[in-house]
Image 1 (tube, one colour):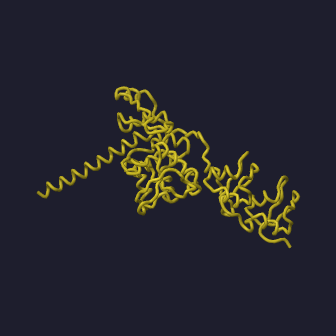
Image 2: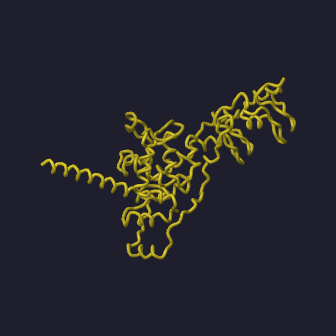
Image 3: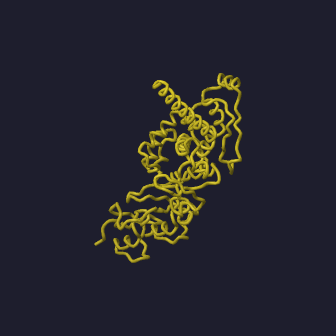
Length: 348
């Protein structure tokens, strides 16, 4: 009797495992194309996106996924970050605010932008796109999830389902890879070019005979270089020696346009850079994401042709009034090329 009970428990446990695996595979079949398309746009590995989606939704079965199309557990944050529809859901605390999307595609795009456009994830984009382990640990280190085992969970799913193979693909190669890894299916695959969950691309799967024949005559898929279809704005961010992040302004950029690009309030960005919110920037000008300092790290600066006190203050990361004070100059006065300015101590 006891043996029979143990066998029933084992059978039930095994059934649950196979049921979860089936849900996970269906999720991959349906969303792999989306993940690869987003990878080519935002340089987030498809394996990371898929493993996060599987984990956060339980293979597409979570309440957030079914009711709110939220596949990555992204919370509302502040009103500055999210002004769209919301849903209450108990996670780390009761009735937390989560984002609600009109489609799965919108959720995938917001996930890409969530990582690509926030300074605290910038180090992820310095990693090799094919190093999924480094990405998994980087996400945990950056605070994406509170679970201390988060990185290990992502890695185990990637390796279990061979999701890293999607990191080497172009979108048009996804359907073939799905068939190669998981066999034929009638599951439909979503594309980011679709605007709603009803607009889908039907998977065209070759018959087993055709697939086998093709594999005998074609070379194995080689590692390919991921093409950049859109420049990742996070790659522009640098860290100044004063310890504050900054970007270098491009042609026709303004305080308002950079603030929008990096989800910073225009008034805050203007304050950090001692400008007005509608100020147009000089190409090559430093634009800081935090307050400048009262003195520089370097001892002095030699004025170059075309320099003025404001641009020098930006290069040095020093407040403009402090730069004038350190050099006993009147506000508005400009130095000549070749002049040596003090950055740390006041001139005698």
